[in-house]
Image 1 (cartoon, one colour):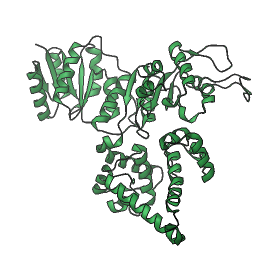
Image 2 (image 1 turned 90 degrees about the vertical axis):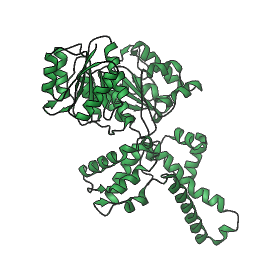
Image 3 (image 1 turned 60 degrees about the vertical axis):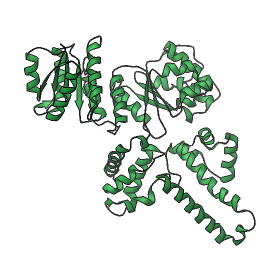
Image 4 (image 1 turned 180 degrees about the vertical axis):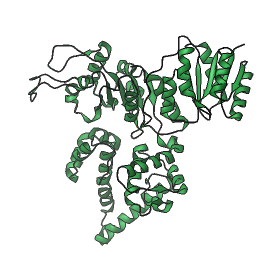
Length: 479
């Protein structure tokens, strides 16, 4: 009979785990400490080891890493209540077969044990430890899935495609893959494909030689060369023009590129991480994105959940952002439990970025150190919750009509009210969308359902400087 050794200091968890594994047909031995683990190993190596991290006489992960030298073919499944990216990565580095955050599903544990028994090959050797100061925050099941994927791919160079709405943290995932991987001592080079004019994309990516085009007074290295030995992060890859997609595909296939105007092939020694807020499969079906490039990029997909689908992480994120604001010199603030519950009820269309900006606003504008629900309500996103959204819009329109009537009493009778209201709304709407997309006029026009030429005309008419948001980057204030 297959033997499973369970190391868990919580008696209740130890009992239910043992019962579930025995019902699945395994012989189970349970211990509550590292010392007990060593006694169990002295009686004979088990077929699978299931171990907690925090044990009364030491760190289970550190001990598992040491065991990998003595028992290189022993599959280990790690259980942990420390549900962070750091723990998931440490488990992978220690050679663990799998990592299950607590609370876990017993069926998932039984499946993991079965998978460990049927696996082929040796356990990977541990790699050097990492700093615990990692950028991603959240303990929800959705984020645990993200952590587990990251932990499994940090030690290799597989291409990763990160998808998710704007503001969900796609660049943070890309940086975590770089900072935790074997290329961490080389450059991390990001490039936003939506922010570069289509005629300059190839020169930005691959560089250019002197005289390659008008204005090319000297040779310039592209992002591929700048990222040599490191990671190239292709953000908003879905906005890449078709002709540039073809060139990128050739580089991914051959592992070499030439600069614009150059003849010498240069080796592309980079790890590619791409990100998009679009459905690339739909883009392929609609003919806007190359199918072969999509499959080259989509080797390891990582899907980031929007904040509304992991509301349980909102309090943790909110407190973290307030603490970071205080560390940067802003006033120290704390939210009441009721205020945190109110934040959880919001939809957060701008996701984590919107929450972070709001916490910084609280830090600056709140009068008291402890912030209650009455203080935060006027500054909450107008789109959340849904009922408040509709009420707020109606109130704002009523106030706008009153202001128009106060300035011109004839406005309610001369048939111009509709045009006046639309004109008053249009400017802040365009500014809001430019702020969301970092000044990118193509994406702003697409989101508003108008063509780019129409948007440009409205920018001129309304005297809006789109370059302001291009310089500031996405997610900035419209003030």
